[in-house]
Image 1 (cartoon, rainbow over the protein chains, first blue to last red):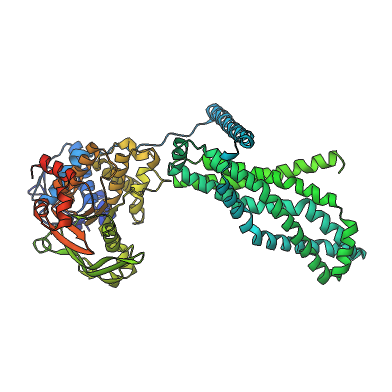
Image 2: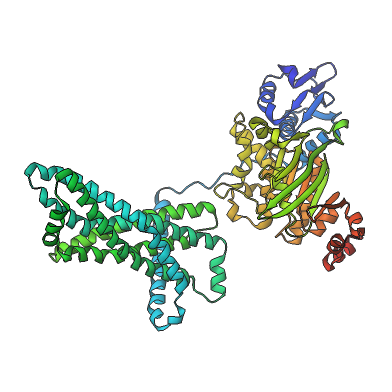
Length: 371
Length: 264
């Protein structure tokens, strides 16, 4: 084993390096070096004449060995290394002094952590508020500066967030209607009250499921894309380019998107309501044998326009939430691809969080006012 | 590093034979031939759209030419199997134009990344080897724990160079190494390349527009035009060439200024 990488000629105080001192053999070289007994003489000659190959990893190990031996009081000379190898050994000896690997700063603990957390929270809150303020200022000025409205940006946002989302919104809400009818229908059947499925489906879809499911899909589909688009633009310095050209990024990127979502989420919600009810109707016929005629006949009396309106009131609010959170997280992207991913995740999570919070607030308000 | 034995000195490491490449509906290369010997420092130059970077991508196997054969270390690229390709990757280092450092990792983690693929090394050894390459590339030890976003352009290039040479490759490919650097950083990078060439016996192939680099570092220039290699030779040789494309390249105002400084 030992002859593999080192041969020690004790009589002449010469150490021969053998074979390949390369990256692949590093572990074996280490093992050999652990079991070496060095000669008594304090002057050693290291010879490279039997060495086949030494790469920089091998040379690094070799230099480390020389350094250790020198520290133990050996005087070491090198001979018969081919010039290229000698160059590497010298280069490493000159440039590299085996510095300790720098450690990253330890994370804060205790009070320091708390303090940093509070201040970070403060900064975050401030940046959110100033972002909302900025949007508000631009939005309020907008009606007086109609030429400043970026129509192209607005219509392309409507197309991307509204029109292209129709298939998935319709399909998923249809399925939600099916699922609701199935779960509730089984219970109603026990009491022979099958026809009341109409009330349950109509009211729950109109008041809750239509707007909520739509908003959640839009948050996942559109909110994330807003963040990724704006974040990538920020990395490419496109936002700075806009500012230089006298266009506020908020004006071009945020306001059109916000207004677009404010319109397209309610429009999608209408489609969601219709397809949800159709899904329920379809399942009612097959599970409860309530015919389409009976269903629609009952629907007219059981579900008031009020339910529809109460649901629709929520939709634009959800739209504004998704757009502002999506854009805000886009502006928060720092200079790396990593950060785009992180902010996009955050954007979706926060959007859905605030959608559900807002929905709960609406429920409380509605119940307070008794509607 | 491979010790250049006597018979290896003149070994041809890269051959491109009759390469045709079609990109976006037009022919970039038409019957292009070139060969590169071990230990050479080569620059591929030519106007925009002459397929300089495409050549690098084709040699690296990132892109396949429409027809023709590329041989690396005497073996056709298409005949390498999966395991051999993996080994081949260790013999080639690449410095991408923007550095292409992984933004979610520190410089040390970036440079150590290829070493981790070798499973058998301990964390300490990996860090030591990576740190050696970082220091040799002219970065401070403290830069090792920084993230790419915290580095200046010159430091970024050095960090990327450290990653490119961490496996002691035999071939080093550089795509516009000095682009976007200030003259001092660019000149330091030139010196670094020469130092690595001397120490590690590297074969260096680069795409560059930097006339200073061409004059100072490069042993042989391969000039692309009209879909093929128009000429190859030293800076001095090419600047004597009468082909209109080549003449224009080496005799515009900027080139004359460089020639005056370098005394060519």
